[in-house]
Image 1 (cartoon, rainbow, N blue to C red):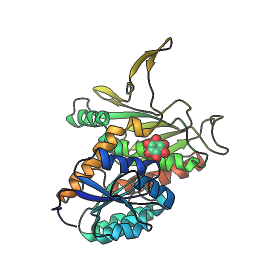
Image 2: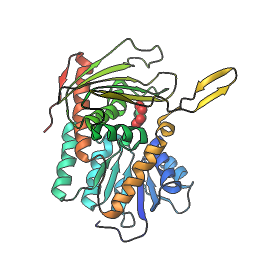
Image 3: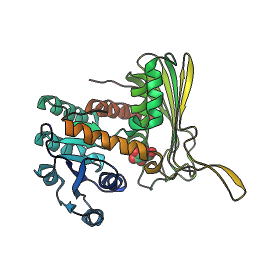
Image 4: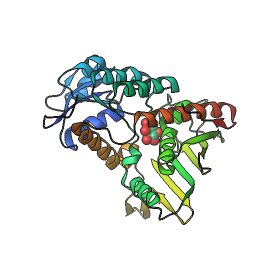
Length: 334
Ligand code: ISE
């Protein structure tokens, strides 16, 4: 597809679980210049249920058929990571813009295949769903760093807590699905690659599913010598908390210090903590998808690229190695 001439970008959503259904709702109600046309999901009943919420949205049984449909201009991929390679490759073959949720793929080789296929096609088409890059607070922090006002960043401290996750969310998913966000945030904030990662396993919460290491502590070494620490804790039992503090030569800045609403009720005072990421990052998700729609209509890709998806996959692979051994693991990018 070259530059759009139609008024509205006709979008298909693949995967309408928690995130995909949230994106479908956003495309219908909150994003301008986009029309949700079709959905696909391996769970047909779920696809039908989501499609039935909106006028004019139909279900396509086969995701590859949805991608090939000439009535669809662009595809939002929110299916599980294991099927992303096939689906993104199909979008590239059709010349369609794709917004692919993280993780882009499950291993470095397949991520690199996507980067290569996009390069060979000669036209950028892929945006990866690292939505923190669209969060107003993260954007303000990034702008401050880029302006030089804080001086050179030396350290980043991240906290990433979920209230709860299903039992199927294993130690490995804490790395691939959760820590991957901090991997991207640190690459983006420092403007450098991560060269080494160590993942440590403190005592697990008694709420953790059997055999799952939760919380985990990750330490990144950056190319320029800076470092980052991240606590990822997916059964914190509290709520969804994401904080990021940068310590730089001339000052520091924190994201997520006070993201809730201050309340007084029932003999208590304090802030509220959202239950999950859909609430905490709703503005970021809206901006991310609007950015993707606008860029696609202009015939461009903005935001995190397939290379960013690839680099994050490589760091996560090293993280998994370190999680197993407890030793630092080198990150080697092609
Ligand atoms: C989920 O997929 C996300 O992307 C959330 O931001 C993260 O906090 C959560 O742990 C993941 O499962």
